[in-house]
Image 1 (cartoon, rainbow, N blue to C red):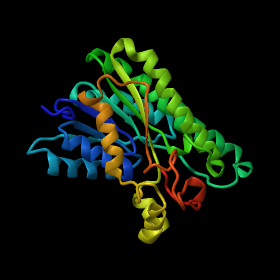
Image 2 (tube, helix red, strand yellow; image 1 turned 120 degrees about the vertical axis):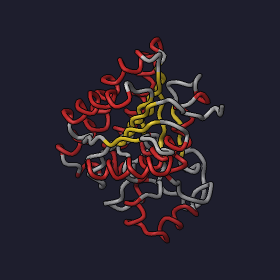
Image 3 (spheres, rainbow, N blue to C red; image 1 turned 180 degrees about the horizontal axis):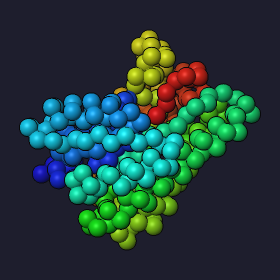
Image 4 (cartoon, rainbow, N blue to C red; image 1 turned 90 degrees about the horizontal axis):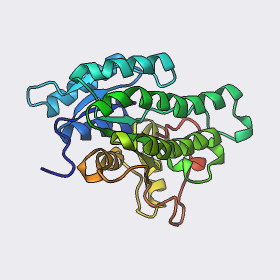
Amino acid sequence: MSLFDLTSKVAVVTGATKGIGLGIAEEMAAQGAKVIVSSRDQALCDQVAADLDARYGKGQQIAKGIACDIDDLGSIAKLAKAAPEVWGGVDILVCNAAILPFIGPSIDTPPELFDRILIGNIHHNFRLCQALRPQMAARGGGSIVLIGSEAGQTSSPMVLAYAVAKAGVAHMARCLADEMAGEKIRVNCVAPGLIRSYSSSKTLGDDGLAKIGAGLPLGRVGEPKDIAGAVIYFSSEAGSHVTGSTIIVDGGRAYLSAPGSTSLDDVKPGTSYN
């Protein structure tokens, strides 16, 4: 059996119908997991789940759509209640859904959006983790992967609230890892750089992404599968002795140097960034 095999595991992936989340859900299914696909749009969740069934199910249902809005604490509670009922429990939780409603000078951040960014990205993900914790503990442990951001690891003043929130997500992974270790629940964080997705492609275009990628140490922007690989590592036997850690997946931009390397501060408003 491969160290990365997820057969018999049940995974919940939020924000799973586009971009990074979709890439994670696809790779989870490819590695044998049953996947609960979640985003705000129930019809889109159902569509992605049906596609995963067709591609990876071998005639069996291996995906289920359950809508959830990370902005809404009540919606999160419903997901936490419904998810374990689908296949009798949850082994893996990937908190990918994120909120970034403002890009611009930090002083111009509307107070209500500052609060929304912190609450949605930190507090609501915390509640989801805690709500699914008993299910994981009852199954002998599990893996929680929080999707942070390179912005939370570097200076990113044009998305200050988001950067602070994602820094908080990485630290929350460390704190929850400490708290849940006795229950054999590992908690880690993946921090993506700029990733090619529906929104980033629409905003920057292929030429724009190629130009940004050429300035990175590894010479390209990230793809959803790059993030999915790190998530699978944390979720599988391969990462069974790792908890409280953050992996930065950004082509080397955060800590290496290359001419023309970019950050969120170089990305114009409207770009979706995890």
